Image: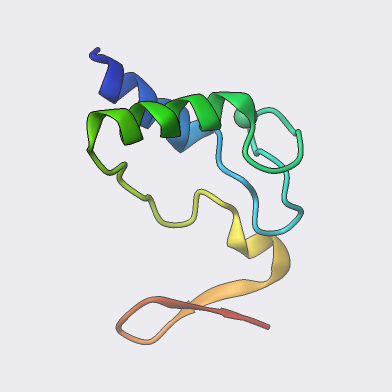
Length: 75
Ligand SMILES: [Zn+2]
């Protein structure tokens, strides 16, 4: 696995939850060090990470997808 692939995997795992602001993998507030390091690698490589839907656990604060666009709506 290349370093960009590794960084993408780190970003997929170390997501800040929209419900409580904690990393879903580490449980620390805000972007954790793993997330920050992976983001720095993407910045230095001039590539953008892929964002994956629902990894920030929006369902924890009652958000649900609505309409054809799949926008999140908090209830
Ligand atoms: Zn983390």
